[in-house]
Amino acid sequence: MPLTESLRNDILAAVPSLRAFAISLSGNADRADDLVQETLLRALANIDSFQPGSNLPAWLFTILRNLFRSDYRKRRREVEDAEGNYAKTLKTQPSQNAHLEFEEFRGALDKLPQDQREALILVGASGFSYEDAASICGCAVGTIKSRVNRARSKLAALLYVDGAEDFGPDETVRAVIGGSGG
Amino acid sequence: MKDLKSQASKSTTPGKGGLTPEIQSRIGHQLRAMYDDVVRQGVPDRFAELIKKLDTPGGTPQDQGNGGPNDNNGRD
Image (cartoon, rainbow over all chains, first blue to last red):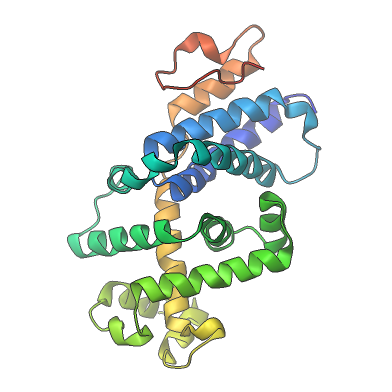
């Protein structure tokens, strides 16, 4: 369809979550923004192939995910030093404990196989349904479900060895969870 | 949210895949915190301008020197 005003607004509205997806995948803010830029250019160049009424965010995420994958193959080595960059993208500086915990989490996320990482982010953070995530990743719904499950198990193993045993020191999350109900 | 609270209280019961519900919700919480932090930053000017520019007849993204090491963006 042609690039109407409303479609343009919808694309703009999707930019914040596209960036979040790109940063979660790549761990590098600069690279993530390049990915988003390339995604937007590609989307706008191919806007005729977008089906009106279909899921625009899912379409854009598919483009970004495919760009990231082809890019990743070329730049695999550079990805390794990405970790430190991510913290710079934070608007508010987290407290030191939260910051350590955050880096630990980010580090664990980066250790997941790419298939599992993207599935977990799409379902667990972007809020896509399993069906949409499957279409974005070009695989079956059951495959997405099992990738998400494996991703969670692996993160748990990396972060909280032996399950609840490691739980004591972390009061931040406990407070958040406990406090949210009132 | 009530849901999370009740899950947290029975954290010793392993859920699906051997994960306790508390750990599951903790992972979900950290993942969303990381993600939403970026979402809250909104749309950087760089992208707002890019999309606006493309809407103008004759406007192309190449002539605004976007400063990044982008190779042949949207050239084809």
